Length: 195
Image (cartoon, rainbow, N blue to C red; front, side):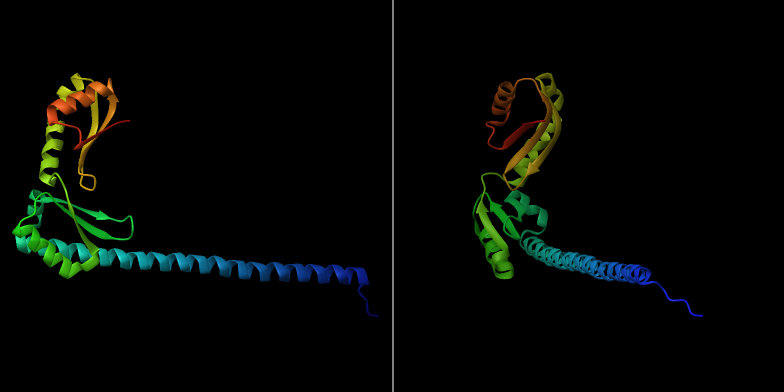
């Protein structure tokens, strides 16, 4: 005698099978979407790595050309400042304090080699001058501490043509500003940031 499955049990089995199949189907496509997003992120990383590689090539070209004109790349620190501007993509910005035959030659060669990837500006101070201010501040930190300025770090900011002074404690900001004014002839080249 054959047994028949009652109709309501058949519906339960059918619903269970359809639910399991729907769940598996949904998970399959959901995982495909996740994998697609991961692949897109990996592709974006590769593109950015290519961009970084291209930027490094441009920086090397700039350094080599400057070195061939000045004898070494570091000599440009006597003429001005150099920084990378990423505000609107990538641009090498070279600021010259004075214009002469040498700076004109650097401008001409780099403009020819790098085109729009290089920009020239006028600066009122060179990297070496900023570096001397930075070193002087660092060397005189004990004197500054006795005046109520407790320095955490000092660094050269070529983009803004300033020496950034980070202090974890400044007893009196107006006295500190006056001290820098007297010692360095103004605070245009120094940014004092208490934290």
